[in-house]
Image 1: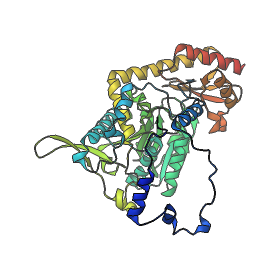
Image 2: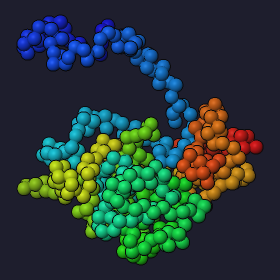
Image 3: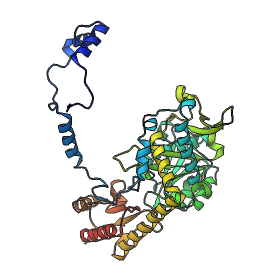
Image 4: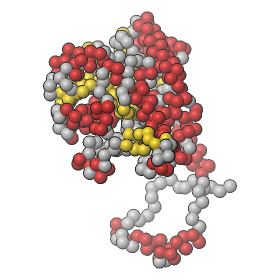
Length: 448
């Protein structure tokens, strides 16, 4: 059996290629590089191996990883361990999708365009807003784009964001706003929710937008009805960052009067990989449609009346005149958007609702069990995450949990000294009663 997956060049192949370009040896290819700056000697790398030996070594290394497949995971904080229908991987692995790039030529990209159109349609239904784009790089960049779009729309240079938004998302927001000289005002918390009195005091006629998360970073469900009134009091925009799975069950932000809803569809069909890739979504009111970043796929008919799909409402500036662009993100996460579309389609409306209900029921079972066992739980209403106060260092506790085959919750003290020794615990539909009870028991031992 050959030790190569791909056939290497033969000496005859090399000779024919060198003859074609007029050289007698490989060194002549580097003639323009002075010999004194060329590397001399052997590279400090391991000797080559056969494919079988190499795969065995890499497989052994990979088995050192701790994953939701090897351990029971209660880690969320923006990336979640959810059920992914088998059909998702089957569809996105098809070559016509897996290798596809930007569908500049609609006549040869109808399948890709239709898939994106379906993604937009489902996001629009979930968020309660009439227009959604074809996806963005991830949730945080979509959120930041919403803020800069609001500043451009209102001609104001201040945005107000709740500290109950994911801290990494706030960091991305600040990075975007710094380049455009937009002031970012952060709103304090009351427990695990936005302090509405503080929010109202800093939201004035200079504010381009109020930005919140729903459910928020701590798992609590914000009062969007009250926040909307504060956001619109001085004609600013209301921007909500949302977990789309939660929107299968919760009242969509669009119904509360949100102008822009963003988020990440990792919860639908995208594994909890180490850092990504993810898939951001961006939806808005019809009034803001022409200011939206990224691409929009529209449905149309050809001259024979057949249904077709095209890229629409896309400013050329986003490709070639960046200084005049409304946004410099003009690409999208087509493959991951397809994964989310296939997942949502496979689940169906009833399946997505059932999945969301299980998240609420299991998270609340866990929350109540912690309370019954004497733990201090900070949240009231939750979706699938909540905060538990412990008596010792969270990182040390998580090290002990790993020995028991458990991936513990997120250490909130990493981001905020106020939450030192507080753990953010995620409970999805994949967690069982036995796993939840074991976590409570183990944390009880470490918390004694």
